[in-house]
Length: 311
Image (cartoon, rainbow, N blue to C red; front, side, top):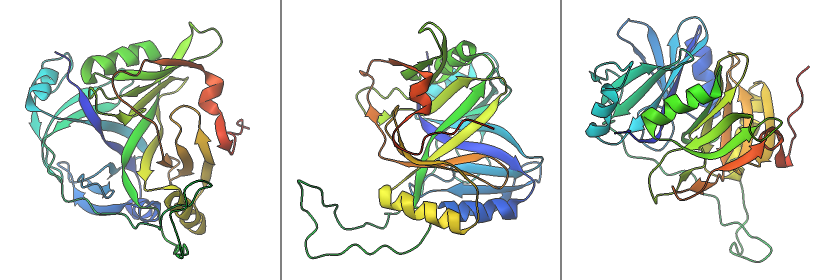
């Protein structure tokens, strides 16, 4: 039996200054609370508005990527995971929201957790702007748009991108445990040289994000970026201005991806990790066949800022 993830749950990093991390995450559009873990380290749990207890964990330590978690819907899937090679026993989770988990170490040394039974709080509604007028749909009449300066309204963690040492090995490992489907594979040079893939959750006929996890073969390993969904384009632009006003370092954007179609904006946190705001992404169900695209489509945009070569 292959368990099926229903979404990404969180990303987990270590930093050497939680105050700086909390300040950034507040301006990024998340709410943070502090606690201590089982080893009595200070930990920052940060969340969006969708009711999940946290979507970003920052523990005190030498800056590094620790791992990530995926949400599992039912106890049977969690039990199946506990029987797989390299799995921990099922454990109670001593973090906000509780639940139970099974932990693994993936082929690249990352801690990967399956969590089931999270206790969610009520979600909060984002601030709504008046309807958008287009060339053919005139919906906003006698009502001007007036936006106030503020941070973005992060709703949820949408996906994580990992650099891996052997793409096919990592792809098989994650698919065997979490039932991911390929949305778009990426090739470099000949089509047979597949070096990465955008992978989504398999929820049958329920549409899900174009990708929950993207794996890309690279010389090094670790998290390339974590992406958080915001309410709409205006919300993303307000967040861009708020982060710029805070003096944070911009990474890439604003633009519209080719694969996934998201409007995106990438920033560096104070420790060099890349964090993305996105909105308006593609949604696929399990019937969508996998695509195959060149690496140029991965780096290209439909409009907006092109990725600049390093150096």
